[in-house]
Length: 114
Image 1 (tube, rainbow, N blue to C red):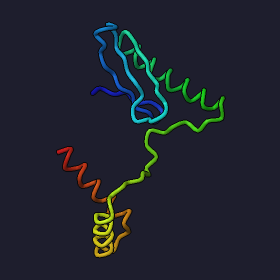
Image 2 (image 1 turned 180 degrees about the vertical axis):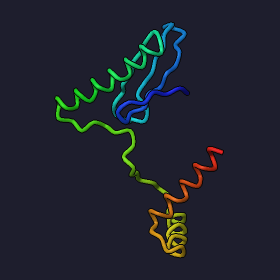
Image 3 (image 1 turned 135 degrees about the horizontal axis):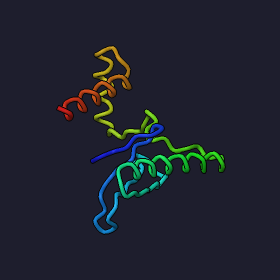
Image 4 (image 1 turned 60 degrees about the vertical axis):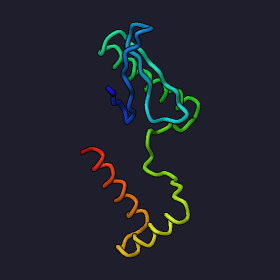
């Protein structure tokens, strides 16, 4: 998938055969449904940036906290047994459970990228 980046937001770019133009949405946001379109790469990039700017301006006007694509924290439900196993392994490795999980995710994402 082709993506655009602007002010910490990432947007998709796809061709819509039905509309005969490029279309996209801001990715990785849960509440904000921000869409844009354009006739060319230059235009869709400008429309993406305009959509992000308008969203941020609306948030400022309404006193809302803009939704960030990723905050760096998340709730993970492991199940009691896996939680216990991970805590034990973290303790054995002299690290916090958080550090253990971060390391495991980094390792898994590196393997996926290869």
